[in-house]
Figure 1: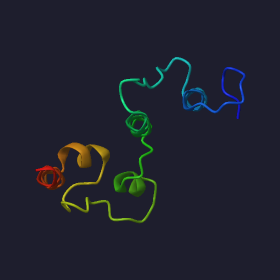
Figure 2: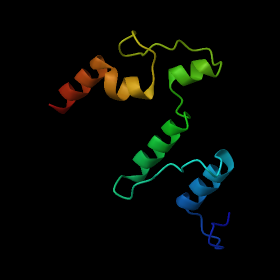
Figure 3: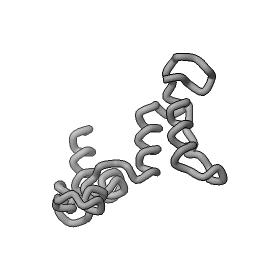
Length: 99
């Protein structure tokens, strides 16, 4: 695959720009990436912004037959927001494992 610079070198940045060009109108703002953040976190945030993370809530909305409750707390719908910020049992377990 050629990058946007005419080379035969694969670059994540050029692939992201190609995908965004196809998926978004030209008027929409492209998803910003930060060189200060590790690439995996940039990619995760990009996928989350596109609602492409395969958490149970997303899978359930797409018609995949799964229970959509969080496996940790069995209370809320499993989502990025819930698992990273709101699931008190998971956060408690992570803090205890660090200490």
